[in-house]
Length: 124
Image 1 (tube, one colour):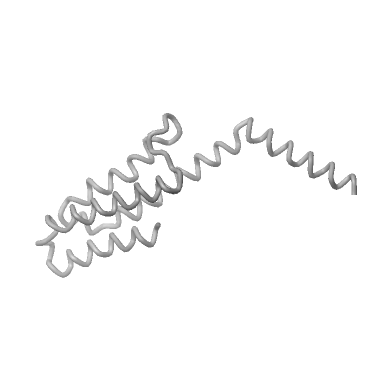
Image 2 (spheres, rainbow, N blue to C red):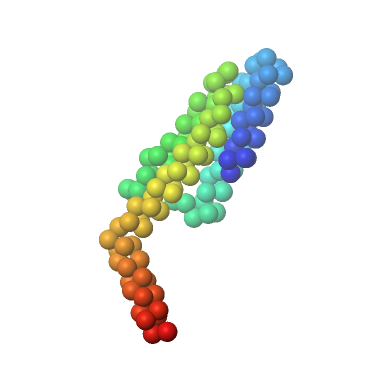
């Protein structure tokens, strides 16, 4: 995902460099729309819910919404906003998973698994 985000950002920067920013008004919205759709569908395919209440919903929405809006600005669009947005989104997803694992229910399951492992070692 990060490599694809770097590709989108690099493509926008290359077009800005070649045309001296004169085609930014045309190419940036097209590339931003395509990038946003790509990442939304990709995250959806992986089971990431952007509208699940509570858990980091704002961070996940902002990490894909902000690059698409800021990337529309001429000369600002060539900065790596998509790469940063994808990295922030991945960090938010990992943080959600970590919080879910550390919850009392998750810790109980880990403790139960360790107890089962300990009992198997005693029986051998």
